[in-house]
Image (cartoon, rainbow, N blue to C red; front, side, top):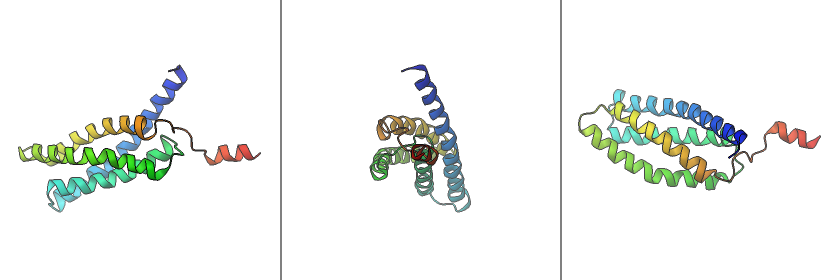
Length: 146
């Protein structure tokens, strides 16, 4: 990989990190609300907060990080395939760890870190493997018209 491409991928990873932090705030905030305030079960709080986070993260990263013109339905199905595996696995693992007496929010934080790493790799190399930077932004579109 050439130096400019490596730099581009480095900044793509930083953008993904920044947007994932915003998704993490959504996930952790709603998790805390459901688990600590409403006193819902850990698993229910986790699933709902994860869903809210995934929807935000997919939408924002597709547009700004990966800039993909890839079919939205196909991309979302691929992300759903990831979560069809990750969500149950992390749900059972997290529920088990929480049952050992570890605070649910600490469990949530650990799973969020694992999710960040796995999701970036999957999203970059599976979902948007050949479609990064294929979306034309409005500035580029206007340049092409002139």
